[in-house]
Length: 206
Image (cartoon, rainbow, N blue to C red; front, side, top):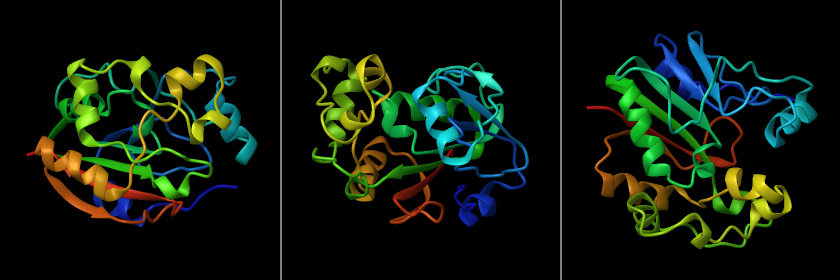
């Protein structure tokens, strides 16, 4: 099983050169000039096992690196794209700021994130942007984040602490963060046009 392409992504990104963070073989964007960055190229991680179970394939990893610490020069790509990835960063502000660093002026950050209600078994409230600011400033540590909820039933042990869902959002909550950070928004949609269980936010570098 593979999910459909995003018309929205093709509209913005087809003629550009970019980076996908944490591509998945069952959820491809099929953008023509895009490399995949992932924290591991092993086939025994939680996520690689999951994608193989869904479609019998692994996404090719072009560069092994953490998604919030990219080995690229400043302003070297036209866009960064991710689907169901930003919630896996303890400090999503740092991740997005890193993505802004590597894209050129006028470039895009294309984010699809899961909606709170679309996560079966999620029991947590949406993550308020003030908590994210506290994480980013160091006022809040990893041990202080409530990790109970959706990922508790799908991720165990070390992987749960390091790679689980650190944050829970709906579009409104995520947009509050964007407004506070003064990130320029090119477009936002309540429901993504790919899997349909998330929202889409497209940021643009001034």
